[in-house]
Length: 327
Image (cartoon, rainbow, N blue to C red; front, side, top):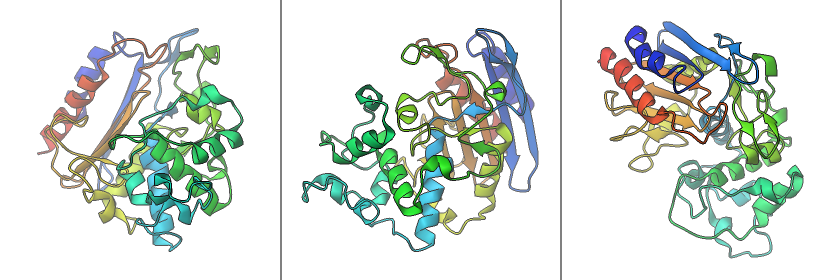
């Protein structure tokens, strides 16, 4: 099935995207991986390989932050319906009736809050401690529920409080890291703010300003690291897996997006499929009904995000070809 799914990737690399890695894994552990193109195009070409680290961007939300929160729930530190103040008592501490003080872990995981999608926090300074304080004390403008990085920044701060250390000091599973070797990492963007090509440094500006590891972004992974995490979800190793698969809204589970018409995973997958994407060009999808998961990792923002790479269409084509052949 990987042979057919590789066709649209081959067509996109290198015409639209410098490089990519495509992988499939089953519950039983059968695995296939293909790599394409370049890990870096500028300033000097570097080939993509199976061991290349990718900036996972928002896959951090589902591969680190969500499972860490759910582990804390299973260990009795918190419940999903506890307010964030259970872990962060100083959240909006000067306004005891502030809406943020009523937000729960479940609401943040499912993006069912009043918080905005994103905020250019990095423009306010580069002191991670000050920015964390700013996030906690800011009067956030209320709006309808949207997919929000701020939700997961707060969850990241909650983890730090409960664990007693920074996220960057917590060791992710094998194949995932906060600190990749730049030479072994796919380049992302020539950042106008930082004045350099980003390779081995987190692409997300807010995560960078927060110390390079945050609840919404900062994690790097190899394709086998992603497939290992996906296989673990397929096998139901963790006690909270059934909760992850349970829809909380029409389109969202805990952390993950649930299959719906027109979503990133295509329409050939089962209704039991969950998935997530990352801004840098990453994505992973898990179809528990078929015992199948796949990941497409790209450096589509290299050397700039300001162009159309067709990544949305590519993701859906790949998903339809992989899930379609498995049906």
